[in-house]
Image (cartoon, rainbow, N blue to C red):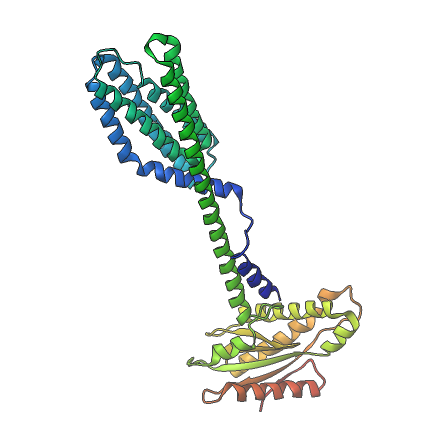
Length: 392
């Protein structure tokens, strides 16, 4: 029932929104933004080169060269901030301080881009002026779109860019036409709207990525549990009957093999007297005892415990002699008889087991060996229970 519920809920996640960690969505969005920023490196270099060409054509070469140097320094600082932030995000380390540095770096970017729009002298070439202005606008647009996953840094860059251009008008009102500031304001607003929509798309894609990853993990977990339960008894964790026949379908071990059929005595009376909950705990304790006994058992082969159903268990041993199997079976019977001490608060609860032992001959089908170990177990019960009997 538990496994069916897991598979059903995992499958339902393919058609319904799954609950995801918002911090993980934010992380994936930032990683996507940082990947875009890294891929934009060639475009950034080309933009700086075109600015250098425009500056070289300006009559006020010295001040424009200083402004270009500031722009280059800002770009290098931003690259360092991006690299640090990406490292912290990918390694899942606290990145609050790195985000602040990134925002500061982008504010410097906005200022240096705005400074490149310094009012040109009257004798400046129209080609050079328009080249610089065009590169600055395109660069601001590309940066804003690239930073769509970091809205605070993006808005800081656009705000500083706009405020820098306003400062030019305040300082040199006669050199800037008011209409130019209005046009630039509309351009900044348009860039902001476009980049915000891009940011929504990035976050939507990040959320889908996280949801798909979580769904895949849930499905993998459900399938792992399904495989576990296909071979395991869900109550005790021992191998089940199916695993027994799968394990022994092709048996090529040269070691001697023995089967021990174990049946808890008067188990129905335990269920009737103390309830099925207590009965389940007795079965779990018996399985734990069998598992521990198998792990301590000597011999050169593997020893495996199975729950065949109800209160019936089976152990397959390999590499033990007839004497070793007999002694080990008796030790197991004593260990099972000591389980009752774990239920001291249930007066009258006694646990014991009847065990039948049979050698599994190399030319013999498993069913025949099982039949003989079952008959030995019945003989132990008929002889008064809490005994070990060997098959003839």
